[in-house]
Length: 117
Image (tube, rainbow, N blue to C red):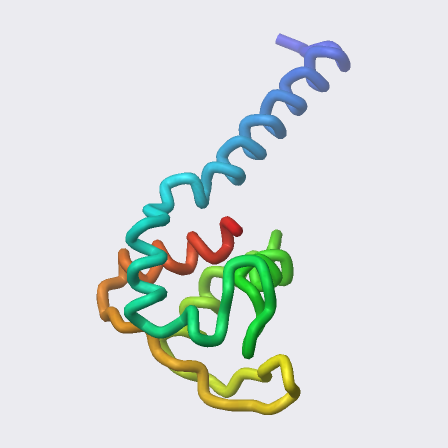
């Protein structure tokens, strides 16, 4: 069965819309209350705020920086679990504090929450 050009375009458009829907839902299952609770417990909010810069970048600006990057989740997970050196807003560097959890699901939830800002 041969498809006409318009049928091919409709199928491709439908596939594109479906992919876009799944991509936008990737952070939809975030438990915001649990993420904020763990962020507070881990003292993340001493340096970060949701939508304004403090000692470190806001979660919103972090999400914007990593938007559309395939390695966003891996890089943020590494930052909060391994404590690499990070540059602060004043230009100084320090080791990033570790998240107060070893649970992979809790950590993933916080990362997804940050990326959903």
